[in-house]
Length: 165
Image (cartoon, rainbow, N blue to C red; front, side):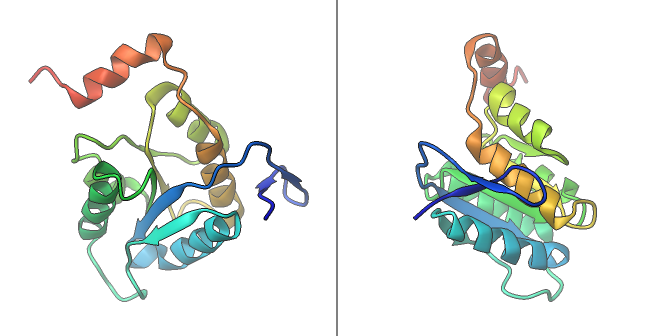
């Protein structure tokens, strides 16, 4: 099975050293369609996708699904998470309530890369009403391809899980 990464809008290139990941994905009703598309993309790439809902575009509350995703990442059921809602803001706030989660709301692949490299983010958030499907795919691909740089970023990231208050 080959993994393909988006290089530009029309060409895909094989990714070297692919390792399948267990990825949790959750959304609210506004991002249901985007969730389905990204879950299919991740499965096609060979990842094990844990779809935490919802199962339709009927109105739901994003905190319920954000908390569910945060718990899956925190307890090790998933290595990474993809959180989606209309703007990406609400569900990212919900996920970040869990001290084991570092959820980054991103809008482009460079921000997704930096979220992993500088912040050791383990969850990416996207807004379905603000991000097109091709950009969302590129963001998720960049996020999963990234890695934590450590070094000068290590102490800062440690402070995120151990605030002084």
